[in-house]
Image (cartoon, rainbow, N blue to C red; front, side):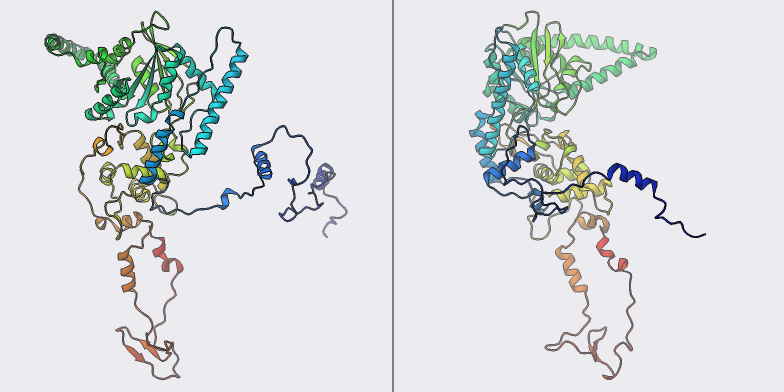
Length: 602
């Protein structure tokens, strides 16, 4: 049976497509062609007279319109590719640049403000107040943007949503004491001096206070330096650790659970009886000591000097109860406003004081949408403000990553942050902490220099088994683990006050583990620790192991009748008529994979 004639029987599917889409005209450009090239200048002609009204336009259209008006040319950012050397201080400033930026920060410190709420009274309507707030907020953002552009100063990515600042205004207005919760490792970064000025502007009787959280990470000497510094600044300060309080509450809960067993309860009662008698004796001794010397807690609660002692939960509650003696916003209780950056432990502090979870904990700004009031006691009310990232000066984005301001999981470039970490944490501390061996500097480099990010991440990734598909240690994954350890305090580095030098303030322990030489490691690990294997030792070995295959004679080098023997002497062939491949062992052809296997080594 012959083939069917396709021309006589139309295809049903093709007919339906033509019926639906066949009548639409194909898109053509201005020159009635279907070509799209830059020579033809298809698309919108920016040079022609355009009389159409433009009320709204996208950011891309606004950029093109501005470039046309300015008469400037521009190129795509993707064309400007710069190759960086990972063995340099990528993304970091030199010592001279750091001093220069610190000087600029000091000069423009008064421009670092928080937005103010406009003046209003009972006669101000809601629409007028909202219009004034929007205008003041816009002016505040414009001033900060001009400061960044004109002075080329890097600032933290501050909160740009007006609703969050409105919550701060309400908290300040109804609070008697505004507490700024800061991280003990870098208190000055998280402290806003202009917020303290704004609190006094709202009402002069209001009080400012700083609560230094995570104080368990600092030593007694370090806390003394900060207590003296804030004494000179004239602001009350309390040292607290929400982590220690939560651990203590867990131990108490576990002890209460064990008391439910009958046998343990009898032993517990007997132990409690002994403990009560001991407490009576200790109480009598404490009373005698108080007569001789005032108690440190009483001195901190009633005195004017800041104490470096880390307060417990009950001591902190008593401190908040007795710190304010001025007129109250509400007569029945004192109102304590809690303000702080995300990831400084504000929510953890409130939960530890309340002994139950009242506030959701998150390191991301925007978790708490509205301020909330919590009664800590009959005469103490906490007013929790949403976590706000206030404008502050920083040197680089690596600083913001290490201080927990920017989320590590959304990090684009890990090299600058890890380089800064390696400059702050010594080599032996990193090796003791992770049990790794970091590659030493090669010949010709400074043997005392800090390790590069590549050297630390290669050693860490190989030790933890974080490998990529091509057999190399995964540096990006390793960087996230190392940076999170720094943010969580496992790799401890604390910034000191300006009155103390950093070398005197921050000290590190001596090496704990025995130092291991790189040559003692397996060859596979040695290759994995270095991306660039071309060290001087390897190059020398390759040069001297490479045997010459032809004679080196002055003048002519092509001698078909002369060959080089295995012992290095010249041997003449039998005659010029002999075929050159006779009496010579043919080289076996090797597979390319085996021939170039040394390039695949990691």
